[in-house]
Length: 119
Image (cartoon, rainbow, N blue to C red; front, side, top):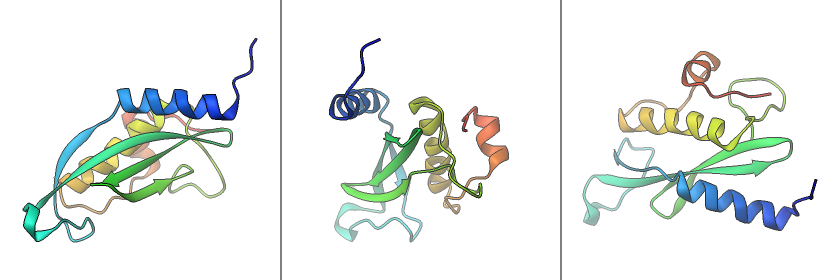
């Protein structure tokens, strides 16, 4: 089996993430800043990121990093998502909460219901 170098892996991940890119319009909830000149919405982008022993995610608001989750939230210790798709499922939960002007926190039952597996 051929080993993939970290640089190649990151390139592959970015291509996969770009393919799975989710762009949504989100109402400004005070936590996501948008310019008054651009209305009351901001574009959100979700990316899966490789982390040690698994996957995490990043959520960008416009061109600024808004949330970086290197591990599974709400679980003590260091746990990671099994695949890029699992990380994106969790990130999409956060985006949906932001769209509804809710706190962006998610718990284990919500992640399980969305099929976001972790170790």
